[in-house]
Picture (cartoon, rainbow, N blue to C red):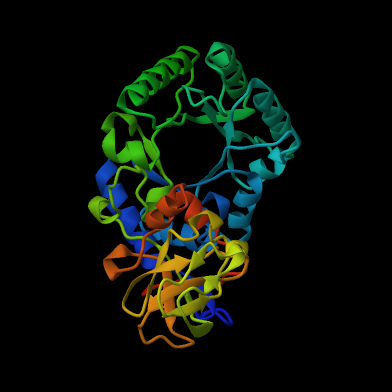
Length: 383
């Protein structure tokens, strides 16, 4: 199925390769077997489009889908996605009853959340309604999760609620800080201690999950029953150490492209964009690209990032503005309407999302996730 591009897509567009999603999931599934895969599609699938990516990920072998909050889970259910979904970040008024009724698994990070989920299960109205929960232990990331000093009380309370038929403890999980091997191993040990505590309380979760993409590929002991494939689903390496997507057998899913909106020839000394932070050192040709920080293009990459235009990578010059930026193409023959690729698969000669991340002093995750709503997503697939 080839999906028709959105109107004006050639002006600016994010091309999402659903075949790459399927292939990436297949590669990851083979690498971590016999553990199962959860494809993480939170934040609109890291900017790629949650529903389309979720379906492709399931086709590629994912057994679970992961989201941050319940609105994201309900979006999948509204679209007819009936695969297992886990949501783990909840506000004080989270609609737990609706989540239970719609068969969404709930990550639990406090005793208070357990209590509220139990009360919600009792209010659903269906005979025997139970909430499926995954208890999260904080093993050292110091964000969400039951604090270690409260774990014994939490698992005892969960066991009591399970015996009463209010909840089903389907999983126990945590998240690594991905600091270094020593820190990961310390967190792994803390997780194993938490699992022992859950077992001592009488719990027998079918799913134990700790690893995201980074540990899933490099720390086999962290795989347990399920791994959460976040950035790996999208073909972006998680390490920040020079490892490329190709090194991991993955393909970048998103290609961000636009067309040249204007071309002009300038003389030496002419300044470009706000504050004239760049001036031409020689007569040169400038190409205007209709993407800016309103579209998620990081202003921090001004004068540092490159694009693929007219057959090779060329530098952005001057400051990136809200709607546009300028590329120095030298004496190349460039015309209005020519394709400009900001990032995509480096095997094509384009910069990668990680290249842009380096230019903006950030990470590839942020580059793809921040692409704004003004940029149409075009989905391509052979299926």
